[in-house]
Image (cartoon, rainbow, N blue to C red; front, side, top):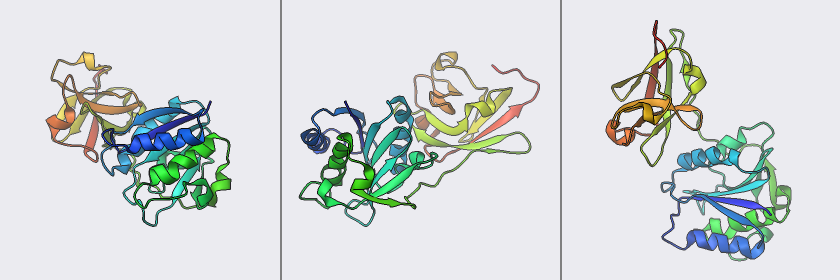
Length: 263
């Protein structure tokens, strides 16, 4: 039974998500539909890319990920299918699938064969009229190459990597802020696993990296390892984003404290 996940910025107030599901089930009644998130901030492609990439590894091989966060809908950007060793992705060619496209062996097809779309295509709702039917056809066994042309230059989001400096300190940045106000950084936990560190963000200093939220006092600012394996900044039972007044793109510095023992 094929699995199709859905990630959008549509919310659940309107009929948009329901219409996409109706198209899919009309073409592939056996599809299992899983909602990843429909609360992506409007037009926030970077946020959607992070959410999708964070969830995708936990789905079975062969899962189809349908994602629509599409500020350029109706414009010149291609509709896209991306294939990796474990998954297929369907959505706009705007960087949304950057984490998948950087996997070894990933391929992308620009969808240019309207026979796999709905008969009438709106300029404002490609999620319903192009992406949903394409996902359903993939679930029925149609190959990506039957629906489009292989391309070598899909859009990639700019990627900022953390840096290890000669003096031992590490710089990174916030790449995601979740609904709790936790600030997820791009610094791998393995980089700061040994020794003790002082974390600096938005003019604030945090002593050490904790193992869990419970290791801090209520309302205390702390750094810890996120579920995704990078360091995050949080406030126990509060919002670090609100406390610090920062979000995605904020700089984070990690300074080694010599002669101390890791907490």
